[in-house]
Image 1: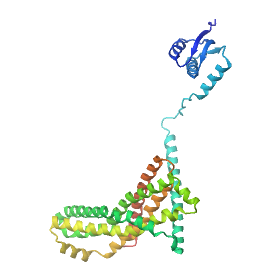
Image 2: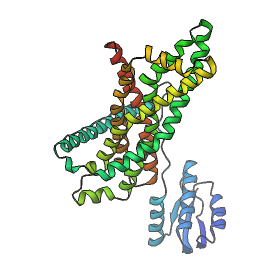
Image 3: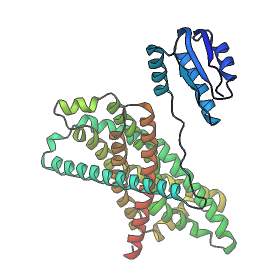
Image 4: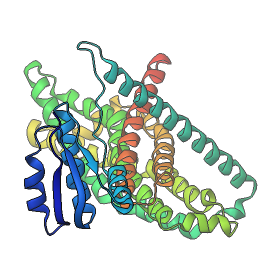
Length: 361
């Protein structure tokens, strides 16, 4: 037999919410709610009634509303539409790596898209470089000199210190390993070839990637956020010519010089440690260096510098161009530019090593 309707009286508003919820919790069986005596009704009351309906439906019964006014019915429908739906979790079969494969596929697709986009940006920069050769007056010397100072001259202290310390470490470790065999004199060859051929320019490029790639991304990304690049295009100014080429040329010119400075500092550090630890005087170090180390090692090291410079500058500028209009995007692309630049520098260095080994250089 059907029970008599539960009658709600008075206001169903935010002020009476506690009493309304207490009465609605008593509706354990499916019942009928009579709304004829309700004097005031707002969204809080509609929400309480909807929650009671969901609770009763979860128990397998139904809560029916009667004597609703048109306004009350519309308000309940509006609140029902505005209530968030619970997130439906997809059932997964244990042992099936569907989600992992999906994430892997998306990451691979995103990586390929980024690589193709960066390759297209590199091609655009190269095309502008050729156009600059044909029309040298398009080059602005003021930004070029500015970026040469920021990316080159200001990096000399840290690059010199890095090279000096690397030379000390190589000489110390080399002496520790070669001393038991009585081959201490070959520490000179170890330090010279390692620094001139590989470590000098490689570590210099890594430091410049950390300094300059992040600086390029931050500067261009900030301009992108403030819509200055869009304003340049509206004025008929090419951002590649104005922003990218000066940075690329500055690094191409300065990175070989920085690599040379780091290599010389490394030789000084290695010679100092050989003198302190092994008793090899500066004169003996110089004689051994000139006798057994060919200038080709230094040339091989410096040949890599322009390629490293292009990679660092292009990645830094490209990531800056990808920045969206918020600070979070700027931070993400800045860190991404440093990681990508360092990774590609190491990859290019490995390819050069394989190339020189194949040709016996």
